[in-house]
Amino acid sequence: MADELTIVHVLPDLLGTYGDRGNVLALTHRAEARGVACRVVEVGLDERVPRTADLYVLGGGEDSAQLLAARTLLADDLVAAVLGAHTTLAVCAGLQLLAHGFEDSTGTRHQGLGLLDVECGRLEERAVGEVVTEPVDLPEVPSLTGYENHRGSARLHGSARPLGRVVAGVGNGHDDLEGVQQGHVIATYLHGPVLVRNPALADLLLSRAAGPLPEYEDPEVEELRKERLDVADPRRRRRHLLGY
Ligand code: GLN
Image (cartoon, rainbow, N blue to C red; front, side, top):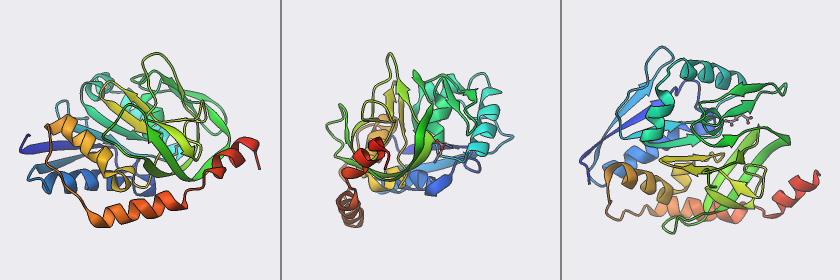
């Protein structure tokens, strides 16, 4: 296990809706609880994304902020390679930015970084509410709980695999799947913040970045998880698909 970790928070001023900043707090809290010191680097609009950190985090954003983030990140030829080479978490707008492309509110397609083999379109209606998914091929991670608020969808191709299968909620809007796993990247539509609600996912990212971690349980978080898992309504998915 490393004794120090550098976490890069990419464009937190643009990509930070629904408390997504909390993902970085969850990572630092859970790392420091195991004696791993954390250095958090926040990348501002005029700053270059550092090339060699341990973990990179992108949050969600409104459409206009997302477009500005896309322009900023695409101006740096190396960003896709840097994120692709390191453990990266991308949430909602962050997921869409790493895809080949995404659509704005007028249906115009915009280029993404093309790091994920994913194309993001538009859902018929905005997806808003509690989500529960079952993680795919991640035996150490129990059911994921989150909150979604997005119009974008995500269609997975080639080597992009889902993060979870939808139990309640909408997720990617295709094939009952939610999120993406590809290479070192985990991407999801889940806010919550997702790493606060799902400490096992935070630990998965930390262990990929820093090596194996000792156990650490936080009873308050377990209570929050249980409460959120209980309120999610599996019928919301069906209602959404049926359009009423
Ligand atoms: N603007 C994007 C959408 O509506 C992302 C929203 C978000 O990050 N919450 O799909």
